Image 1 (cartoon, rainbow, N blue to C red):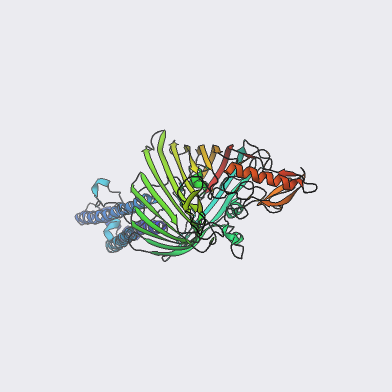
Image 2: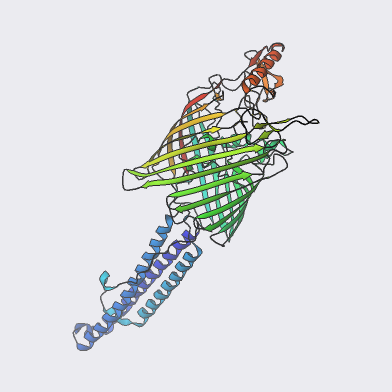
Length: 633
């Protein structure tokens, strides 16, 4: 769709070229005719007030005025085409509909026809040379007024939506060509963690990973290709994202082939086809971004750098097939058939199903509902189905670009979900609930509550023609079972290995609260300088403390034994205890965790040379300052 912008540009330039050709031909004809009069009719020049000469001058003047009138009409039409082009440049996708493009093409043909008519008159009318070239007054010609073309087809193109949280604010595409629109992203950050972890490892985030270091978060190169209704998109991910995003996917542990390596450097990679039906239909297959959680995977697009739990603990990508049905200019329905919940592969035997409903009732409101279900997203646990709903509303409640405060908007998101089957239930309490009573031949079946409930809200104020912005927001979650809580990177642990120091078993508690204050400086549309203060709290030890998350003698590249086991140490070196975390029905989480720690200590006491149980320094609170420079073309 974006390519039409450049076709329109070519159209008004072609019209301008026609005008210049006509004027050049008029001037060219004037010179030889004037020269002929000077050499062969000098007497007539000397007697220019003779009656025949005066009559000819009058006729010539009338003819010349008509030609100049047509030239002025051509100028007006070219100005109109240019105005339409500039108006379309303000649309989010810089896209024109087929109808609008056809109308401009017809106007261009009419303009060319007008130019040919003027040229013919110039060639057949020598009287043009005998009249001085004078620019007629604007009042002497009144071009026919035409109504500017209004795009009523392109989805969501009737307003500027660059203010949305999770959408890029860039309006121009300086590198675009007729068929390909390149995209380049660079995101670099520095994080000052007030817990000062010794190994600089930050836990519990899908955006911030290292403390007291300058790190390249992402370097992405790609773009969008559109040729004859066939389209494709590619965006690479080099930098921290290429190792941190795959570690949160446990589905790669099922079956062979190293999918986490195969997809490591791809953020988006899909292709598909577009049909000109309704307001557009797309069918895409590959890896595409998830909308669940409102925030974009790319920090440049967001109001804050560290999003709240609802966004940070929900999917960033899907691997599968999606359809996009633009029912009206303001309504989109998008079904998904995907491998699972942020997964390169299936976790078990069922794929994931879901979809999005996006509705913009007016220029100031955006409503989004994302829903997911059917998938079995716990590795090697069959029969446990996940459900999730994610609903957001964004409202721009103040828009006065001429004032110091130029714009104000807020977003509100609510999420609810659960898992059902194979020992867990969506309803009940944190304690065991009997869903199937005991019978004379079978024992009672105990199900544990496994659910997710969260919200987040943000308010953003722009200043000085949107060059500065202040965002305040945060949120809260309750996730018994911890099935959506990110596994902390302790001794190299991943979502596949898990960790004995932060188990994720049914019913285990997790409550989290967070908030951020973000200040943005945006001198140009392609760059953001961001400063942010963030605070996060959990009701169980989770955030990296001063002692860090790496046992003595270990590192990310050489973990001590299995990351899922407890670790024994002598203070300078460590070994695998060979003991993991064991679930103990009938005990509270605190009692169960304490019993596991006691058992691990007893094991380590019997290991020669490694008699102490190593434990990571986990805190309930985290405060940090983030400074980032983000670029997008």
